[in-house]
Structures are given as structure tokens and as C-alpha cells.
Image (tube, rainbow, N blue to C red):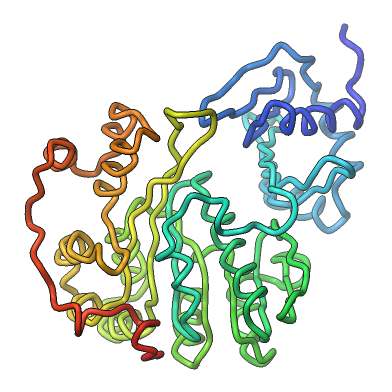
Length: 381
């Protein structure tokens, strides 16, 4: 029979993430730990924790409030700081009655936008004084890190009040130019919706919402953006058009027309992301789809002509817009990713292959005098 694993032994599995340059640790009862390195699962032969080891570990690291939440729901998100190592976002769950967790390493210190290999058009979005900025994509694509970098940029360049509502708090922001209040759902507030209902009374300039999960949250976020606040948030959606459709589908048919107008009025920009393994060196690089709020984009959303959005992105390169296919082509041509990797996620494979051959379809010139992003014209909601 194997020796019980102590808290220090399980903490060592977390510490090994840094040494292995892993983004995630997968740990479950009676199974050796596994890591995600450069997007791939790497199994180990390290000692497996028993269910008793796991429960003793959780008893040691969870607060009474967190332990009670997990007892009631069998799911828990929380942040854990390991002194001298780093901070981790941990999701705790049950599978077939046994304990399991996935830990993600949160980069230490402030996240500088310039380190993320993202287009400057995304950074320019925070020039807007009010409106809605959305970062979307699957789990692990860099949404939280991107938001942290944008919040850091605001904190560095403005004198205002930032309120974040998160579950859990991941990146801790030291105050630079702004007052910063970070609220954790389940500890500092009951829910995203509850926190948002009260946040405008806290006189914020910028509101960051960890994730949009329901109509109440979306409705309140749109209201905050309409009343002069800059709102940044995320969605678990696959692309730009699907994200807009998801937002509008939160609302019943009788309220959808108003929702279209509100979204058209408030949207500053929408970014869809994927992280892909690099070809030129170890690590991953983001592929992005970017939609900016130009007059044509706002009109298409207000009139529910979402089929036009893709073409508007293709034609908006002069402003910093791009489709996922265009981003993939650029990454391939600069030698940062392999073409077969790009082809696996290309939304339109035929179009991608034509673009790689230098053939572009459906791209027409547009009027640069009228089609400017919101922050360049300073026409806030």
C-alpha cells in the first residue's frame, strides 16, 4: 500500500507546473497527475493521491465558506496562492463519486499587453470611455489573461475607479492610477447579477465581469454600458457572430429588438481567440477574430443582419478588424504555426486554402471617412 500524500506533496504537483511550463494540472483520486504543456496532455507516473489524501488536502486549503459551497453543489471555483511559487485557479468537482480538480497557473504580476502577441487594435479598445468590450472563446484560450492586460492598461493610464466581479479572483491588480476593488462571487457578493445591480452605486468608471452567464447579467451590463461605464467581460462562444447571436438569444422575442439596439449602441469591440502551438519555438500563439464598432457594424446589429458581420470584418483590415481565417493565414505565412494546425480550426477551410494561395474573395473597398471605430470618433454611448 502506498504512503499517504501530504499537503506538501500535492503542493509539489502544483509547483511542478512552473518547472514543466504547464498551463494546467489534472488531478483526481487514485490516478497519477497529468499536465497540459503547449496545449497537449502529458501523463506522469507520479504517486496518485487517494480519496482520503485529497479530502485532507482540501480540508487544509479551503475556507469554511468554500467547503460549504462545495458540499452543497459538488462544484467549486477558487484561487489558491502557493507561497514562493504562484497563484492558481482551481476547479474542484466530483466524477463517479470521486474527487477531481483542474488547476491553472495564473501568471505572476501585472500582465503587460505587449507580452501577449495580440494585435494593437485590441489594446486600442480601452481608449473608449464607455461601452462594451467582449473577449470570447473556449476554456483556456487566454480570455482572462487578455482582460487582465486591458485592466492593467486602464489602471496604468487613467485616474478612475475599477470594479471587477469574478469567480474566482484570478489576477490581483495593484492600484497604480486607479482605485481598484475586486469582488469575488460567493464571498464578497452573492452572484454576478447581484453585484452588477449594486455596482453603479459604487461610482465606477470601469466594470470587469468575469463571465456572462445569464440574461440578468447581460441586461445589467448593457445598462451599465449605456449609462457611461466601460464594461469588459467574456463569453464561452466559438466566434464573433455566434457571440452576438448568443447575447441576443438571452432575451425573449418581445425584448429582442431593444436588445439589438442596446448592443449596437454600446459595443466597442468583440474579440474571439484561440491559442495554437507554435512552429518556430516552444509555446503557443493566439489566433484572433476582431470586430470593431463602426457605423456599418452597428447598423447590421441593430437591424439583426448578422450574416453581414463576417464580410464587414473581412473588409475592415484598415481599422484592425480581421476574421479568424485571415489571422490564421498571417500566422502561417510568418512561420509561427503549421498549416495543418490552422486547417484544423479554420472556420471556412476552402476559403482559408484559397487565401493561402493568395486568392481573396468578397473583399471590397470601404469609405475610410465614415467607417471609423468608436474610439477614433469619440462617439460614446
